[in-house]
Length: 107
Image (cartoon, rainbow, N blue to C red; front, side):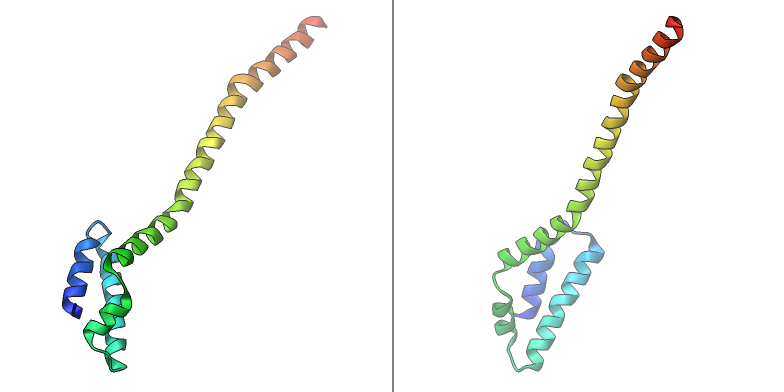
C-alpha cells in the first residue's frame, strides 16, 4: 500500500471524527511517510511499519475515548451533587424545621 492509498483509507475510516481532528491525524501520518522516505524507505515499507490499518484506527478511537472519560466522570459528580442537594432539601431541612417547631412549641 502506497502513501496515497494509506491516507485515503485512513481518512475513510476516520470519517466519524471531527474534520479538524481528522486533518491533524492525516498530517501526522504524512509526516511518518516523509520521515520514512528521508531514511530511504519505500512508501510500502513505511505503511507496513505503521501496522495493520484496523488496529491503527482502533487505537485512535480508543485514545479519543480515553480523552472523553474525564467529561463522563464530571457528569457523575454533578449528578451526585444534585442528588445530595435533593436529599438535604427534602429530608434534612424538614427535619430541622420540625425540631425547631418542637422546641418553640414546648417552651
